[in-house]
Image (cartoon, rainbow, N blue to C red; front, top):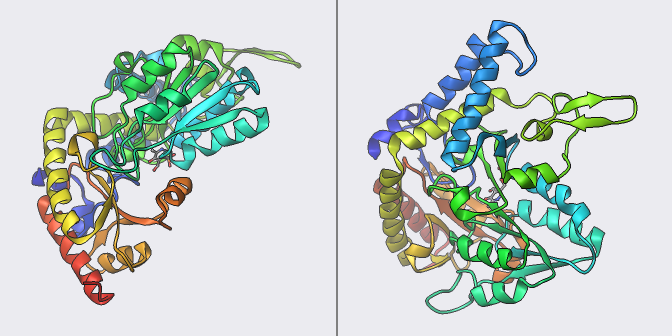
Length: 403
Ligand SMILES: Cc1ncc(COP(=O)(O)O)c(C=O)c1O
């Protein structure tokens, strides 16, 4: 997969760059940049409104991108809503479901949610006076850092109205047994929401197979541009919730006192959407498809195994040992060295990694660490990248004289 790097200009201008912060944002291939540039140079018009050629062309490109996204996750076009990202998607769904909740209900999330899928539910639980329950992770043994299904069974009960879970933990790399959790949610009639921000670029997703009610993700974590995300919603769910944003493009009728909304997806896309980014997202899907899931997953498995072997010799990994239960996202600590120091020193060798609380402060508190360093892999990463990382970590340890 070394040739993949050639598709990213950043590696020609920065040949020594070892970019392994992909869980934060993946790099963007030239094809995606070109698709966006083509929109701006050839048909940079607004959509759904203009009666002239370049607007029609923009509308076609926008709607065919929606179809591409829908096909990518096994949905129908009118079940795809473009948003600014996962954070917006989580907030939008939470606010749209708020009116259905009462103080006797409970909302269920996992121990490893990103703040984006934690804070909106915390706020709603506080406002409604209902309970926010947290499915725990297993603490010790072979299955440490995987989701505790016994805890899931005790959290989800007849008062559960919403189950909102990360498909993959952005800190631990843990893959959630989403099918099992969604099945549990169904037995009690709860609405299921999947935060697929960390899953979408690593595994094929089919929302019909998952049978979730909602699924959200961001374009920039899947080789696409920033500022674009997706909310998938089952058609009947989208019909039954109120729009979060009101404004142009989402109404059939308006009088001085009220409006009648269009059907989904327009109902949820008030205002001018990020047209260029939507087109870029469709191009990112072409990039993933061009590599093919089989190649991508084989490569990522190989890299994950290699990284696991090498990293465990030099750092303390916080995440599942069983590689079948995780993806190539490794958080780690080195006793006596602050994660920020690790990140700063490896950067001297052009190794870009993440350090901090990763927008998961309650998880850090639970794990008893102030923060962690994190590496996360994508299609263009090679074993050589990992060797450079390990060399850089060894230098950190020498600098801070850790044996
Ligand atoms: C699991 C998860 N959910 C949500 C988010 C928020 O995504 P965004 O910043 O694109 O809205 C992230 C970002 O790291 C994430 O990893």
